[in-house]
Amino acid sequence: MLKVQSADFNVAEPIIGDNIALMLNRVLKESEALEHIPAYLFDIVYHDGTRIGQIDLRIGSSDSLLMFGGQIGYGIDRPFRGRGYAAEACILLKK
Image 1 (cartoon, helix red, strand yellow):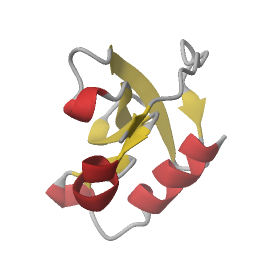
Image 2 (cartoon, helix red, strand yellow):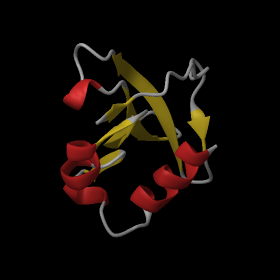
Image 3 (cartoon, rainbow, N blue to C red):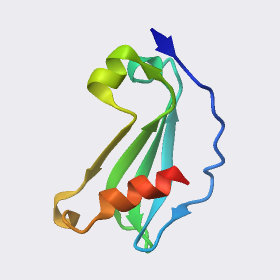
Image 4 (cartoon, one colour):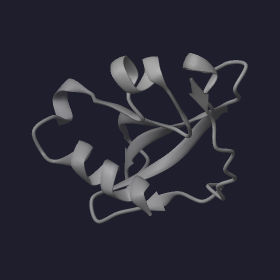
């Protein structure tokens, strides 16, 4: 069963947190995305623009995505791990 919710996000501006910011890298339309669920791909950066990782947000759901994929995927580059950046990025996405 596929359930897709269309959403328009205004993410032209960085989403800025205390230690990091999220910069929209690209948007995957249904035809390009995993399980045909639109996704927003962000770079996680320091305020000076240094890229330290990425976080992806999928808008919608399917049975296989919920079981195997998830709605948020992230990765922090090895030198920057262990500092809570992934958690901060998830909180920033909530906004």
